[in-house]
Length: 198
Image (cartoon, rainbow, N blue to C red; front, side, top):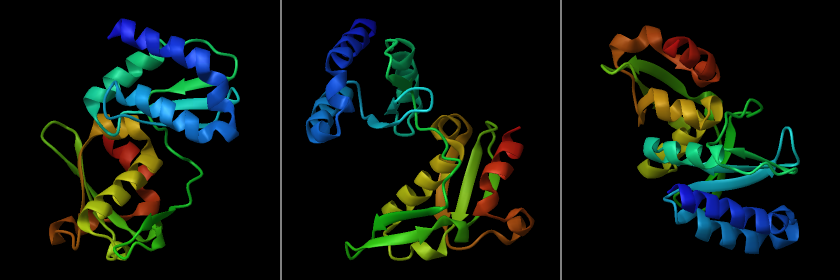
C-alpha cells in the first residue's frame, strides 16, 4: 500500500492547480473520485484551510479500518505551500444545529438538531452507545434519519472521536424511563460526551 499512497501524492502534486481552481470543480471531482475510491469507500472534500489556503480531507466514512488508512495517507502527504491535509472530518465548532436533507417527497427540508434529546450509555468495552430522540425527522425514512443523526454527531465531536469512542448511534421514539435522569438536550452533546469519555 505504501508505494500506491506515494504514487497518489505524486499525482496529486502534479494536478493540484486543477483542484484549486473553482472553474475546474467538475473535472477535479471526477479525477479525485477515481483516485480516492481506488483506496476504498472514502469520501473527500476541499475547503478553505486554517494555516494554508486549502485543506484536503480524506474521510473514512466512520469506518475504523479506513481511518487507519486515511491516517497513513496523510502521514505520507507532501509538504505543499497551499495545502493542509486531514485524515477525517473535524468537529464544526460554528455549527448552528441546522441542516438540510431531501425528505420522503424529495423536497429539500431544513431541520434543527437543537430540538433533539440524547442519552449516553456505556458499553462493556467502555465505548459509548448513543440514543437520540429526534421528533422533527418524521418526514425522513429510517435510513435517512440515521444519516441525519450521524452527521450531527460528526459535526459536534468530529469523525475521529466518533469512530474511536462510539459503539452505536440510533434514533428512538421514546427513552427508557430508567434513563430519564440522563436525558439531555442536543445543545449539550459535545460537553456531556467529552465529560462522559473523560
